Image (cartoon, rainbow, N blue to C red; front, side, top):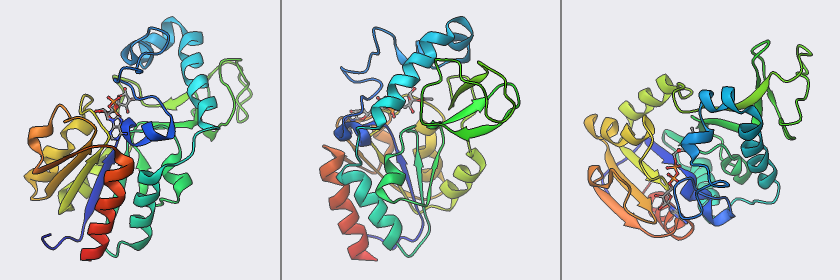
Length: 235
Ligand code: OAD
């Protein structure tokens, strides 16, 4: 393996599939007949807030019985042991990376366990439901809390930091994402443009698979621990 120092890792729903969390676009990817694009937009929330809250309340409740899997644990080990720069960018709104122990990470699409008050603009940790119109603990307004999730048409979080890390990276790794949603789907091109080697690990080739120098096809729970062994062995 060529000399590497700076690693950026992008993860998607596929890394949490073996923890029992449904992906968005797989065979189990419809939620009560709704496509994700029909519930994950500001327009959907304006049209039918109860439906959108119920979608995220169900996903937040499901987190309670989901545990990090071997892929999350392997990335947490890499985070703890990798001597160079590392950034794990997840599109996932679950908390399985941090529960596995990863620290050098960020949630570009927000988090299920965060609520955002449209009344006072505060963001706060949130474990329970939002569909029952709880009052905001900060300003007291009722029914103004929404999931702190980046919906279609909204700007993902921390893009400047991500772009900076991609430009500096010499290895970009994409794990468990279909490559259907931008800007994350374009990270491989940015990283390559600035000279990084690129690797994807996914159950099926992603939509942008041809952009990667290397594709490993299989389950994240098997591929990621093997890859982490390789990388730490070479450092
Ligand atoms: P998708 O559901 O689009 O894609 C999941 C990918 O994971 C697919 O390519 C699967 O083949 C792969 N996969 C499934 N099981 C796997 C396993 N055990 N090991 C490895 N790969 C596996 O999910 P994302 O690409 O994450 O956005 O979706 C991107 C965004 O679309 C999400 O962040 C979400 C959604 O709209 C927002 O919520 C804003």
